[in-house]
Length: 449
Image (tube, rainbow, N blue to C red; front, side):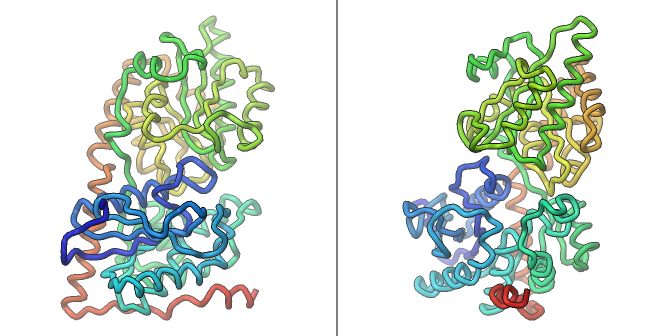
């Protein structure tokens, strides 16, 4: 079976309550965390660790335990109804999730050497179990509640206990992983995390799946009904269709670009938008697609915008490759994997200067950084890249080289494993982890509201 490991292998409990490595990517609550859990766990398995990924069972069809990759199992924990729920509704289910993890370990007689929590809710579970079991805990949040609250305001649907729980988790665990310098600054500045307790280990991209493909070949491999010709100029967006991703800004910038092109008597470019809840673009299932379609019509560019719906990872390089330049301008982004995907495919990226994008995109070298919600600035840089194919190609080559140097999953797993080994070495020297009291039971917190 794929989960078999050698005797004496260190055992890791990888907790990810809502983001399973086997989940389809691209939905409202599926994305970067799913990729992280999948890639880091499988590469830890290749390094010889035994990893059990615990995630909430959200379908009757899911087996209790699934052999996922060599050295990796996915354990589906009974916690609430076996159906998909929005992640913000899962907080009251965390005691059941915690108890399910503990019960599985007890029934199997499995002793875990370390717990690795993903997201704030699994962080609560990880901190509590680490305290009970006396094992080290490493935590990665993927997004911070205070930052989300600042950017989303009233639109933030997180449970009100989130920020307090995050603070408790930071105090309780042994080490916190930040994915970029801005997240480290949030952890230290907003939450008071000791700087020497925070390690920057960025997320990454699979450079075998996301790889360069010539524009001509890529355009031959995507759907002919998209009507993208070999000589067309194409701006591409790949990602989730959510308001905070601000694809609306991309549509506005594209309309400005079209006006400038047409005023100069030049052919209009096309905009390729890849993403959504379904394989075909459906404005009912994905309301943001409906908003974007309406905007494109109002701005007079609907005939130039191509929606594809969701696509799986194994074919996404074709869509990145079909574009001359890729774009992502969210006004809030904790890290963001899609800029790395575009860079790995050898395309320059124009991204908003927020969160992890300021770390992954090297301004003026692998693409450009622009202010969020500034369609004119975005249009100007798109114009420059479309007008200068030699710059576009040079940036594309530099983008791929930057990914290969800094942002590969084997590197992430090796650095994560080194963090584990350092904790175990400290414990063997008698440096027992000093944790604060475990966070309060969420049911008690709820009663105190």
